[in-house]
Image 1 (cartoon, helix red, strand yellow):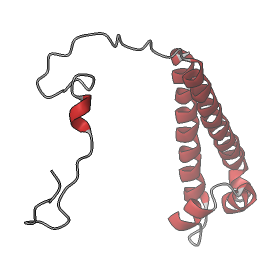
Image 2 (tube, helix red, strand yellow; image 1 turned 45 degrees about the vertical axis):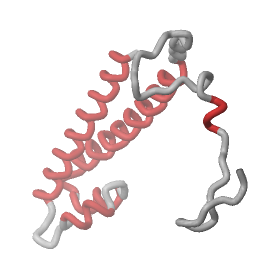
Image 3 (cartoon, one colour; image 1 turned 30 degrees about the vertical axis):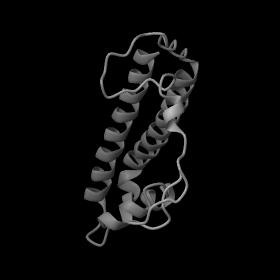
Length: 133
């Protein structure tokens, strides 16, 4: 599944590169008052507007741009769905053995010292003593 996911993401990347190349070609074909980078940023999915920017001489580039953007979005969506499915299909790791002896001085075994962890009464204010014995 990892190889299939890699291939899908490679196709998504190639589609995005193709769409970016066609966007650059459309920008070069557009008139001097053509789209700015802000217009491309906020209207890259408005294919009718992009075709209008390209004009009659850029119909082919606009069609390729539209197909490349749609293909990129489809491949990214498919990759996300596939990766989520793969993660959900993984088997859970077996738990580690709990009876292993811990030889770390920083870890206190709770069973041996359970009676010492009880809550004790403290003085209500610092510096005063408790009158109970």
